[in-house]
Structure formats: C-alpha cells, structure tokens
Image 1 (cartoon, one colour):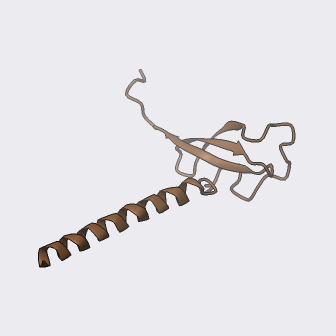
Image 2 (cartoon, rainbow, N blue to C red):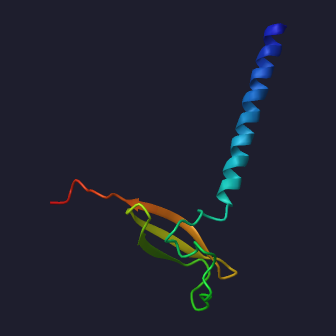
Image 3 (tube, rainbow, N blue to C red):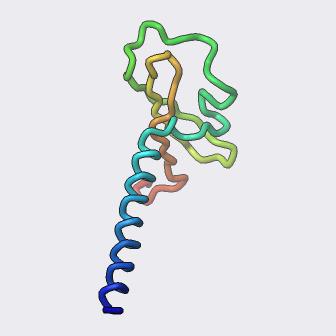
Amino acid sequence: MKRSIGLGLVLAVALTGCTTGAALYSSSYSSAGLAPIPGSITYNGQPRTKLTKSPVGSSFPHSFTDQWGRQVEEIYVIQPDRTLRIAQRHYRPVFSLDDD
C-alpha cells in the first residue's frame, strides 16, 4: 500500500514538471524578442521612422560591431504595428580556422 502511494506521488510530481515545462516553452515562444544591446537598431527605443512600405512579417538583417569588438548580425521582423522585433542574433567568430 505504501509503495503504491509513493509511486503515485512520484508520478504526480513528474507530470507537474512536464506541464510546467510546456508552459515555460509557450511563454518564451510568444515573447517580444531578444533584448536590444548597444548597436541594435532598437537599443534606444523604436526608430522614429515607420516602415510603411515594407510588408508586415518581413525581415531584414543588421550587422554591427558590439562594445567588445565582436561582429554581430541581428535579424529584425516588422510587427503589425510597424515596430521592430529582434528575432535572431548571431555572433561571428573573431578568428576563423579557415582564414589564410
């Protein structure tokens, strides 16, 4: 009897962990994007000019050098209210083994 109660408690805790993980995943999926860093287009807020001719949902890249000298490439997506959201950020390696 004690063994079945213990097994039931372990299963209940395991299932609770599974549903919590799904909730965390769904909330991070619907996030507002990555936080801007110095050099990002949206670092000091949204740009003053609205991208009125670009279709909603379209994306474009922006490359810059961050404060530590790393090459950064960000991909922005235009939102329905014409604001920009950082969808992806990639850091390019400073040294590459393929360079001659």
